[in-house]
Each structure stands twice: as C-alpha cells, then as structure tokens.
Image (cartoon, rainbow, N blue to C red; front, side, top):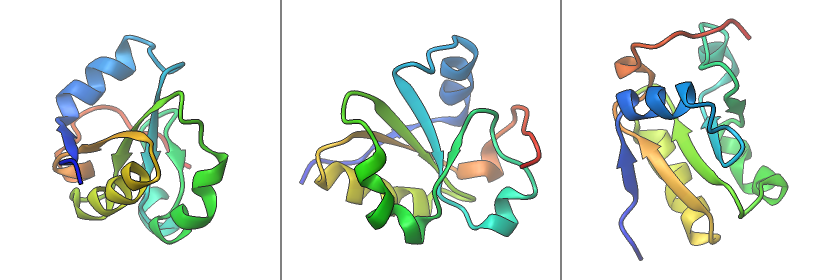
Length: 105
C-alpha cells in the first residue's frame, strides 16, 4: 500500500486561504467534545468512528485533508480512505500545531 501523504498545518492554511475549497475538503475526525472547542472554518466533521459508514457520501473527484488533535486518528482515517480509492492527505501535528483561525461549532 502507498504511503500516506502528509501536509503541514501551514500548507493547509495556504490552501484554505486560496479558496480552493471546490477540490479540497478538510475533514475533522475528532470527537464532538473536541470539535466544540473549535474547528477550522468550512471543515467537514466526521468522527473517526463514523468514517466507515460515511465515506460513501464523499466524492472521489475531490482531495481530502484529514485532521484530528495530534495527527494519529486522522492518519488512520487517511489509510482507510486511501484503501477505498480516495485522494487523501493527513495534516501532520493535527490541531495541536494549527495556528490559524477556528470557529465554534
């Protein structure tokens, strides 16, 4: 299996600011209580435990950047989605490394 591509929080911020949201979707896989503390604007929230049921609602025409608190759960989600044929990257360091804005959900 191919290696999971990593993307830095700074690169994610740049993509987000370029309004490239038509082709790139941020997916936050943290739990509800974690997301309640702040989520990246326009990120889609799908808890890690729900990925196996929800991935059928995602388009293989888009690129997905997976996000969690530290990068481990999002890596697991990235592995699963990549196995299903999705174009996916993992945000290294997760929200602990995110310096950009967040919104309340």
